[in-house]
Image: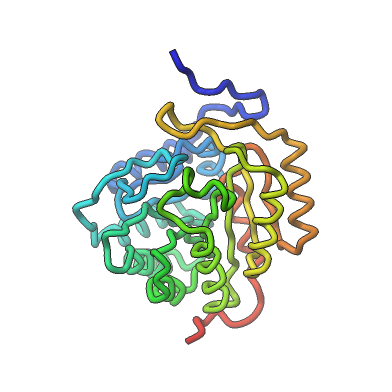
Length: 295
């Protein structure tokens, strides 16, 4: 019988627990919310939740895309919860989070890709939690500039859009996405709001070569991306893409040093790194200058 790949020692973590973790689980269920931490089987869930950071997944739990790495279920959503922004803000307030990350499934069937719900979630959170920093991890909105502007006009502290992998692997890893389009999202976001920190992340261990990763990092710097995250791909189930190899910690350190030499303001690189790992500290990188969206 086929089994999941055996993880090396450096990828083993403790099961999540602690008072903050337990409180967030209960509140999430009471308010009928989703967290990408749970949906994506994140190995850092307990650590982040106990440190006052959580990643809420809006627009439901069903994605219109079928990425080969992702544990979130794929399907055709039939509803839109207009009250979700208020409930997310309420959860962030009750938990006293110092940094909140808001992400979503892809909702390609919606004319705006769900951007208005993103914007309203930011706005509602600002009302209830003015001291909480906000990061949004957005889809590509199929390249719709108006949808991106809708989000940027609410001035998130960090705008994150993940490239996920190198261009050569897009057809198997992100079949409904386009590498140039994702780069353009980051470029436009920085142009619209120069004071917002832009961020992107990838997984390694999917079959990429290290020189391809370095080329991708160069592409991100060319669109003035500030922060990059690099983590090990872990196969959620036998229905997902297999792990091509487990990248060693010293290789992650090498990539971090390469990125820093290129001018990234911060590179979070390690086997267990995920998009929102240590995200609260990255808000301090917020650039000086206008926060207004350029029109």
